[in-house]
Image (cartoon, rainbow, N blue to C red; front, side, top):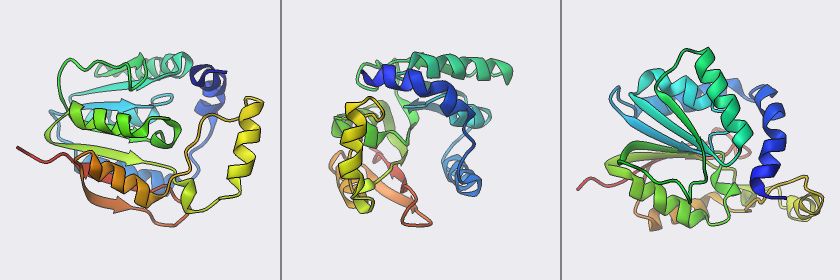
Length: 206
């Protein structure tokens, strides 16, 4: 099963699921908005059904939100229309295949980097898509920091189509990859070890 087909099958259930930790989610929204300006153009990859993009739309000029799942994107468009938003644009495309027509002020990669096989390429592309001084914000599940028992379970789930590709990386590995790409990590939010690290990274100004 392809990754797109897997997430197409999960899209409706994903949309219906409540947020597990609302207080932590709100804190992440607040951290992100501290780095947003009204005139910003924002790009999000792996946007899922677009909930976060929709919540941020009122704080910036434009958000382009992408996902490999057609069904996720359909739901995103539907919810944006319900909210009366005209500055959020959804597109079913991978980070690898997306072609930017102009640089962005901010790139968001939320709960996605651990699901991308060529993570370094995705990070490098995020860097290239940003204006000098632009901001890349990521929240990445780091299973390598704990849950090593999942190394046995997830491959079995993948054999029956019950799990996608998942990387077992550590936060230290992620930070190193971000810094290798040229980013400066300027803020970290991780209220507990079991919470995915939320990192604010900056592309140096010229």
